[in-house]
Length: 213
Length: 313
Image 1 (tube, rainbow over the protein chains, first blue to last red):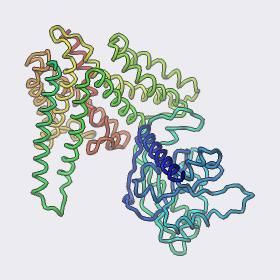
Image 2: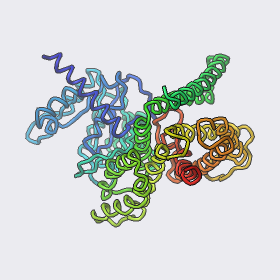
Image 3: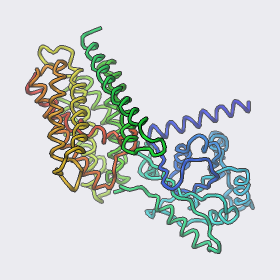
Image 4: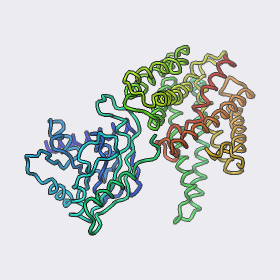
């Protein structure tokens, strides 16, 4: 049964990847890093629920196997299908966002890093529904950069998803989606939280592709 | 085996012969290079040759499958081209439904009309009906911001990526006296003369091109273009046996198609410059996107279709 579930998870994963490729021709642009197996935290802008599957789809197989998206438990445990896709297909690190639960999300993230996994995180915390390119970052990125200073923090810009699937629309438009990976950053010695988060946001904005109207 | 099939196979083997020669040439040059420093020009050349292999194989298989194969191939090319152009055009959420209709209704309908051979409808469907109807859909959502720019850019994308591209397979609908069911070969003729003209324009332009045609837009030169068009005419004359035009007619048709295609390439270069991109996408290794590869065929297709329609039917 376990093997059957693993097999099903692989099939679903491949289908999601192929669907993303067929509709949006999603492709990676390796601007600041090479697609080599190294422990990394990919921190990305968040405008749509499809952000994470897009990043996941463009990673080469060797990198995809070791990457774990950090995601909200309330979203991924909502029904049985999501409870299969989130934890088993994407191998998510699930974070409980409910205020009444005294769960330390950072402990889980650090534990995943210590297992050797790479992570995908969305430091804005929520989906960005404003006209600003980014919401202010939460402290999590700084804290994990401080706790595990050797891990590369890679800015990852997902372009075009707001136009492919704006909130409230049903049919996705088959426009081209690009995922741009920038040069990694680290928390500098003595850098304050605010300075670092500002620098991280700037590094992420610098990854935006050319040619937007 | 019909004579049309035999001709397609002959064309395919001819193209494979040229590609084998070009591949061997590249491999010889690569072997003579020192192994430490790869030559970027040579690597680009080899990537391009590899893409050409794929393209010749795809077009060849489509032609052998007959009308349906060609229709499906160009419908997919339209889809890819429309996706590339609409990714860069001005749009807002108010256009979402109109754009979805463009992709999932207008495009398939245009190809169905071409497939059914309804010339009266496919010639006006996008320029008239889509032109009137899609802005209405956008207007219903009530966002006036940059409205004219949005609808105009969407319509332009449809004209280029769907209407013009669909006129390549529409060549198969032309009923030319004494040509029978061989009109499939006109598709091969158009693509081959325009693409070889482009290739030789690039080559001669690099060799002894001096006078830029539009310095702000593209490195294209008058010298390269004239040589390219002349070579396209020569290729057209050599291929005249697959056309109903005769040797001189084939040369003139090839020259006209190639010249229009090259100026179309300038139009596309202007748009890329304006939007600040080098290529439309990265779908074809070494060549950029579908629009980069097909721009000259796209502009040549309506002119070639009309000339054939008025002069030869």
